[in-house]
Image (cartoon, rainbow, N blue to C red; front, side):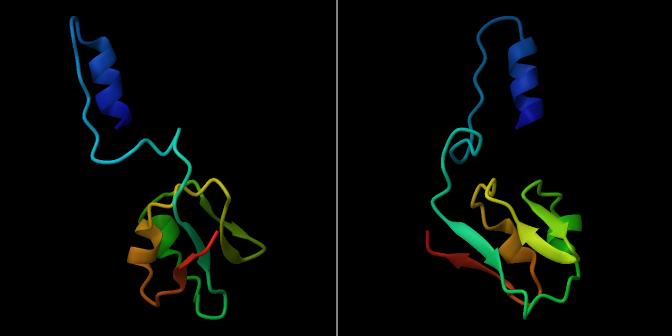
Length: 88
C-alpha cells in the first residue's frame, strides 16, 4: 500500500489508489486480539512471518500492543490458536 501511494503521488496527472479495506492508520480497530500465554509456545511465527509492528517480545512473552489494527492475521498464522479475539 505504501508503494502504491508513493507511485500515485509521483504520477503526473490524476491517480487513484483503491484499497480492499479501510486504512488502519486512521480507523479504530473493530476487534482486539490477545495472546493466551498458557497456550503460546513462543514459536514467534506471528512475529517472523508477519513482521507486524504491534507484536513484540516483552520479558520473553509475546505481546500485542494497543496499536494493533485488529486485522487478525496473527491469529491466522498461530499454529496453536493461542491468539484470539477479545471483547473491547
